Amino acid sequence: MLENLPAQAPDKIIELIGLFKADTRTDKIDLGVGVYKDASGKTPVMRSVKAAERKLLSEQDSKSYVGLMGDLDFCDAMRGLVLGDAVPAGNVVSAQTPGGTGAIRQLYQMIQMGNPDATLWMSDPTWPNHPAIAKSMGIAMETYPYLHPQTLNVDFDAMQATLSKAKPGDVILLHGCCHNPTGANLTLDQWKTLTDTISANKLLPLIDIAYQGFGDGLDEDAAGVRHMAAHVDEMLIAASCSKNFGVYRDRVGVMMAVSTSEAGRALAKGAMAAVNRLNYSFPPDHGAKVVQLVLANDSLRQDWLDELEDMRTGMLGLRTSLADELRRETNSDRFDFIADHRGMFSRLGLTPEQVLRLRDEFGIYMVGDSRINVAGLRQEIIGRLAKAIATVAG
Ligand code: LMR
Image 1 (cartoon, rainbow, N blue to C red):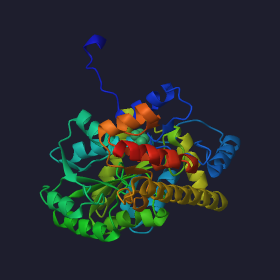
Image 2: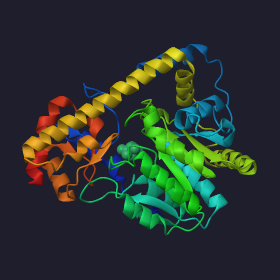
Image 3: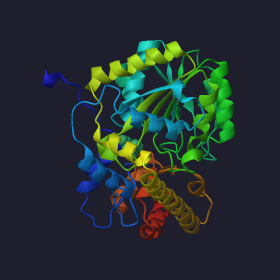
């Protein structure tokens, strides 16, 4: 059997981790996978997370199963973090998942259970795992245009025009904030317009929110999602704690279904428990419990907010520095968009050949579509990076 397995193409983002490791150049620069790094180039365990882990270690008295939906206090804390008071708490059902990816996978399965004829619409471009998971499950997919090739901002007119072709019941996958890979984001007004389109055409929004707090602030980053949640009949949300709590390897995420229908919510709850049971029985507890402890304790929560704000403003500073340096090196405003984008990523608009040249000649690693992880930068390497980009971009 094993010899009959189809050969798998490597995931383009994960492949970069191995390529970077294998590179023996000491001055190599990793702008690949979306992992936050501090000014010394490390991905630290956040202070608040460490403190909560110590508390957990001393207080936890059992490793018995928690429940198919995971830690319900964690789920409720995440509901508050993402949705604020945009909808009544009772209108949301949620279950813990292994990371945001787990939430996406589980929600796709629920879509298949509830509406097998639905087409899943995703932005072009999007995080490559969005279509990869859907393809592996046989879900019908379409794309909507997202990035304007000239302005490198959202091409909202094109997006709206395409989405008006979606049929009732189709699912529209949206990035809650900090669009991956482009860094270009919808304005609140655009979220409002999109909400009207979604309601009028009876579409189902599926929000992937993995970078809340990395853009304009925790509440600001969720403002569009909250507006939409308050105005549509149904919404699905996949939220990740990997980045904003730095708990990447602990796999902490949550799936939510927001609905004005009591019967719909009851069935969603059953479906969430079922898909968790079918795929892995119980979601992993440790990281979710830690996040819950941080969010429930006033001083830990405040410390986490401060750390997150430092990370966010640090990334903004790196964006401004890189845009300034590129302006100097290229004598143009061609890369000014880097300062306007938000979140961990920006797509530079380089060709795959230019990206490869950066890797081969300069030891600079980024995803093949020229996505850079802004959080992988440090002030002292920005000059060298800008020079290299200017050299290959000609
Ligand atoms: C990324 O896009 O780099 C991150 O979301 C990590 C991943 O799993 O791809």
